[in-house]
Image (tube, rainbow, N blue to C red):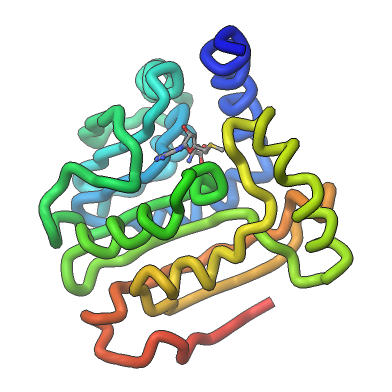
Length: 222
Ligand SMILES: C[S@@+](CC[C@H](N)C(=O)[O-])C[C@H]1O[C@@H](n2cnc3c(N)ncnc32)[C@H](O)[C@@H]1O
């Protein structure tokens, strides 16, 4: 089991997350980050080449020693050079070792599915964002069709055990709102592939307290 968790799984995650179909999401979500950025669940660092000049610094957290080591290597070997300062912190997202209001942007891409307590991680993200700061996210999660949802609930317990804790059936927008965010933009759609794994939630959110408006007045697109 240790061989799988520490050797095979990190390589599988790096390979899956390197799919070309994900690049357009990375480009939009990560490319819009600015200032001091916290990336939650940075994994093997696949987002790093997508940061634009407006991002001054990235702090990436992840509990996996192996994935952080890969992120360092990937950043050094990327075809698009990673020029901004990056700090890696081996840590879970549920309790962040950072001061309140200390980041301009929090980025999370396909990690809320694997974080054991995504609500706690999102509350922490909200806490460390400065007023006017932004959460930028893309996640897969619960699909709208009841038939697909049934399979997502059925498959998740087994899938989670072989995929490093990934849940197929989290309703990401509800989790984000419930943690204290006001969602400012949200697009939900299927990607090609098995429907239980490919329903995407992509968008931006701001701490509801600093937005000064009710949490649920959101444009929903499909
Ligand atoms: C599917 S990978 C996504 C990696 C990366 N965000 C990407 O887009 O390529 C999920 C990541 O969530 C990380 N993760 C799992 N539990 C976590 C936790 N409690 N806090 C932060 N990250 C966690 C895993 O180690 C893994 O790197």
